[in-house]
Image (cartoon, rainbow, N blue to C red; front, top):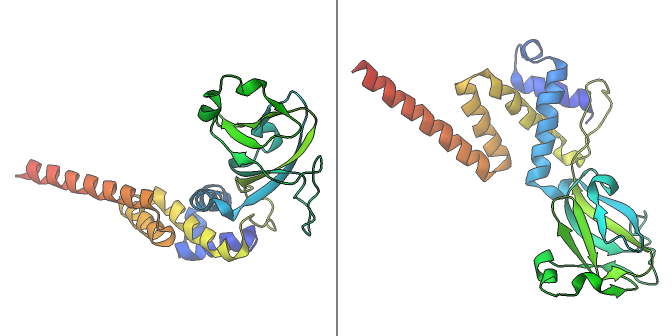
Length: 230
C-alpha cells in the first residue's frame, strides 16, 4: 500500500468528516508516521538493514550516526560483505563470520585490553548509544557488515506513491494505528477509546499501563466532583 491508500484507509476508520477534521498532511505526519515507528519499536525486526563499513587501522570505534544513521539497535557485526543479493558472502582477510558481543565493562576488567592487537577482531561492544567498538584492535583494514534494526523512512504527504519500509502484511496495521493516533486529540473519551483499540491491536504492556492511569485519573476526578457537590 502506498501513502495515498494508507491515508484513505485511515480516513475510512475515522468515519464521516474524517477528511474535514484531519487534513491529509496531518494524517501522514501525525498518524501514519508515528504508527509505523511504534510498530518498529515493538517489533524491531520489521525493518532490518545491512550496511557495509571498512574499519581501518587505528580506528577502534565505529560511529553509527555517520555509518548507519537509521540504526537504533545493532543486532550483529559480521566479518566480510554479507549485503549481496542473492547471498554470496565475500570474506575479509580470508575470514567470514559473526563477531561475538562482549560488554565494555568486562573488557575494562583486563588492564591491557586497549593495547591488544590482532589481524582481525573477534568481538564487538557498544560504547554509549551510538559508538561500536571492535576488539582486539585490527592491525590491517577489515570489511565489516553491520546488521541492525532501523528507523523506518518517514512517509511524505507530497509523494503519494511512496510505500512504507515495513513488510506489506503490516501495511493495514499502520493505518489502523494511525486512526487511533489521530483520535487522541479529540478529548478524554476518544483518548481512552483510542488507547484501548491500540492495546487490542499491538498487545503492548505500556499501553495497558497508560489506560489504567487514565481510568484512575477519571475516577479521582469523579470522586472530587462528588465531594464538592455533597
